[in-house]
Length: 116
Image (cartoon, rainbow, N blue to C red; front, side, top):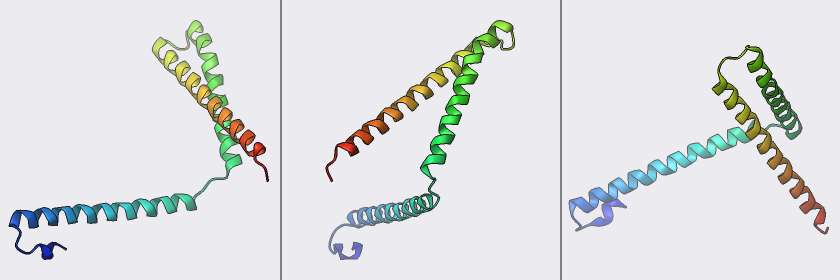
């Protein structure tokens, strides 16, 4: 493609070569991303165990956050900022889990409304 420029200036030919190199790099990058996606799909996780593990992790996080104020009062934890961060993290995780739950319920209702 670059050799077909003909009578154009050397600057134009060099610009075309640079553009071709960029396209070649992007194609190579896309191929490596596609290979990575195929590898990740091969390592797919079952839904039920992943959901159970996520719920267990959330439960542990919320339970540990619930005990933090008592730990502060008894003197086991000295840093108030650490407690605030952990409480906020547990709150956000719980809200995120509730939004996922709501989306799953909405999807289920939508599927049940479909006529077969």
